[in-house]
Image (cartoon, rainbow, N blue to C red; front, side, top):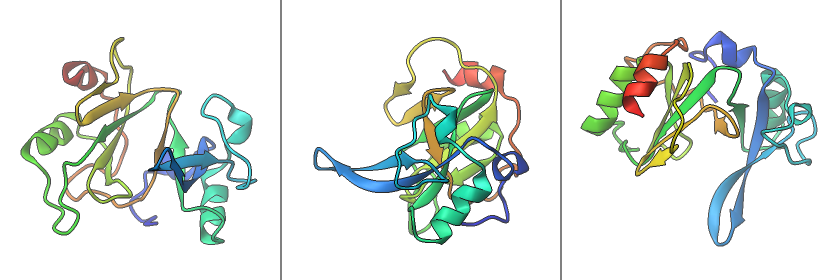
Length: 168
């Protein structure tokens, strides 16, 4: 976990969960757990299962979870770009670079190293949330947090409703 580049609104958040790698139907997944009780599952629609990001970090540091996460909502939107980054070199695909540039907000590498998460403030238009390698969510989901800031992107989370609508 790299804390140096985390935006204050993540570090100071009370919308945190922790996640653990589990296998479901033969596929690895990241299941959310309560940061203050990392043996108990968290729910993205139940704020009583969330906590302070600092508590989530402490659970991860103690080896009780694989990583921290942040529940989307309250204006926080996440854009997930899958399989767009070479994990060894950090090279992004041209379409991913274009989307990252258009949204121009805090961006970090996903836990796999092969994708990126972009966090913005804004409102998503109605409609589908996943098309191919692009996912966009404003509620009902959480995003893992790595702190592995993508160089050249803002260190802050910015309001991007218009850019979200254009991408959508």
